[in-house]
Image (tube, rainbow, N blue to C red):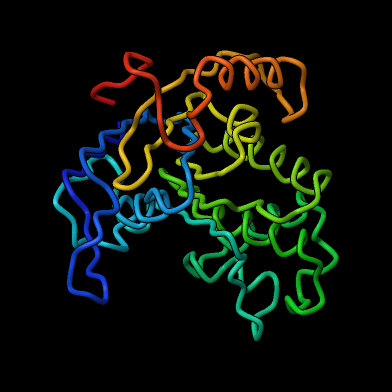
Length: 252
């Protein structure tokens, strides 16, 4: 189980006063669980992923169950492909040099309909194709934990839906624990087993919501839209990082 406790995470500002990004945050995820993190801009969502992934260790708190660095996959808002490497070599960048890894990388790219551009450079690809390469790179190591920071932001709806479906298929096959940051509540409800809502900075979990809708789901499915409407009616300030007293605030 992934277990996160962040007592306090600060950044110095130009005036010498600390900016407290996260405080009193507790969050857990079972192995193989898909957890989305939603909250207002500046609430510390990306900071949370950096702490969990070991990219930022200057924090008062602890993270257990994440595994070693080679157990963790990342996917960011930008694909972050190396322009001088081919599609295949970009995927292999995070793995070892074994024949098995190379075979797995090819299989992933073919499954994502990128088999004809294995040797192409990223400059030849569309934005959606670059995101598919980044998704293949995230899964090629078969990560125990996958950290995703708004990976489908700015994509058109059909492309985003296609990538979400690919993500769910890979996640179900691989059994990774996923921590997925998004501003889009409907995206979170379509993807997650649980949605954790963060307060405004300093971020902490103010509502931990299990999502029991049957899979597969799309962001515009009737069930997702109904749950979205109910949530906003019951917690009108939720996406601003506020929850009504007693509405799920607690240790998680």
